[in-house]
Length: 250
Image (cartoon, rainbow, N blue to C red; front, side):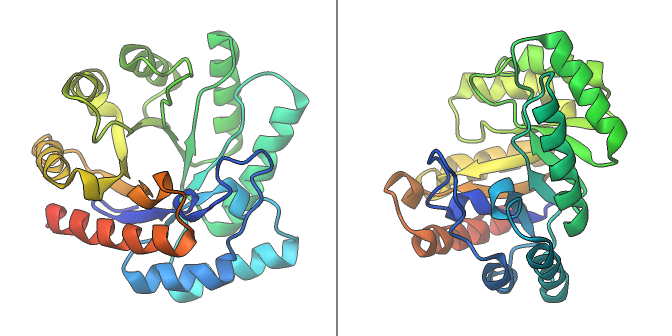
């Protein structure tokens, strides 16, 4: 991961992203070369695009990623950070898939009902792998409040745990609170619906650059997602969004 890298979050081109079964409709062997040719620096890989692949299919997808120059630096995992054998098994299965792709970071969320249990689980997980843990700090989790999120991430250790800016196009108050509490913890940014907020995105990208943070970026969701667009429509808009963001970062 290099500063100003722009990745495609593959969840953004998946029509089944919010369905109950989350069945993948994306063939990585087909899509990874297309993503590289479009100019992305790699992908933030949705767990369900790889976790159900057979061993030979996983090996083939990882080989294609390397061959076509489309690395998988970030693996988007949905492991629940709560006690339970099923959650431990989930994280270890994801560790194996991420290792196959050479991922160096996880996009994850601190979840569950107990602060102490979540912290203990995350620490155990970090001890089993050497990736950077990027917390999405999603709404509806204990990390939704920026001050709480910053406190928990510092408790876990800033050498291995960092934050994703998920409020790039949010209202001024939400954006400023994230910068106030998590500014020094930010390592990655999720970009959503850029084409509907070009002036705001350009302004805030400039603000983030002035802070001197070495950030990477993912085009996560595009406007066609809200219109239930198919993979092609979402990908086409992702490419346009990436190009605009690239111009802001130059």
